[in-house]
Image (cartoon, rainbow, N blue to C red; front, side, top):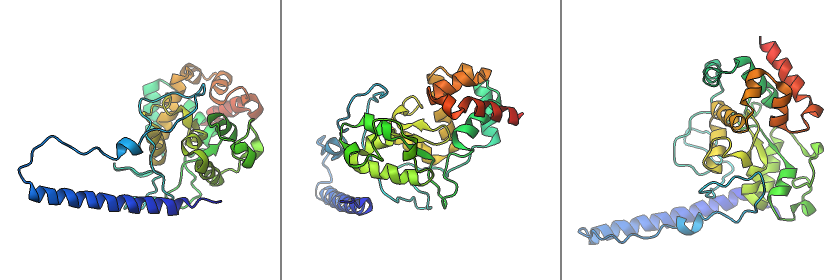
Length: 285
């Protein structure tokens, strides 16, 4: 049976709003009745029960965060000025800014890297943009949903009913590309939302979700929100990943085969990533 996520979220939010109004009204009435009450008794928040992290199977690539709190998804969920946000979020989120020449020059200087090497990586890994720019604004980040990782990250027998979402082996034919990858991700999230998010690669650098800590984020929520925020954050995720995987030296020196092997895996030759990177860097000169 298809799950209507929008309807479920609307119902949950409406119930939460009603409960919150009841609590606020009760507190206001209590303040009127007991204006001098300075006791230390405070009610436990509902977050104590509702935000406990789900049980997640162990697997080698997974890096535990100290706290990994589930967060609410809403399709679509927009801020007052119309920007799309994938999660409930209390802080202001800037516009989806494209990375600028000044950003690249600054980061190249900070990391002591030829700017053309950074541009080559951006060009090859995301075809020049971290967002689905053909979508009406605000566009979503580019993703690829990796069915073989979803298979590894969840013990659920999803492959029996949805082999297009969960596969024991990498299969190029499962990719739909562009906006259709978001359809695959949202379908996978109906089975296991957290592991589905970790099974997609995101943004300019196409960093896998399960690498959110290697990308410099304290939580999966931070990683997702920053991917929606703008390309500079996406670029920072990529550089943190490169640095934490000891690939920065290869990038600085233009050792493209070594860099591509570390960044894309052993199959880089089949996709000619090293040749594409070298060519993009040369064209930048």
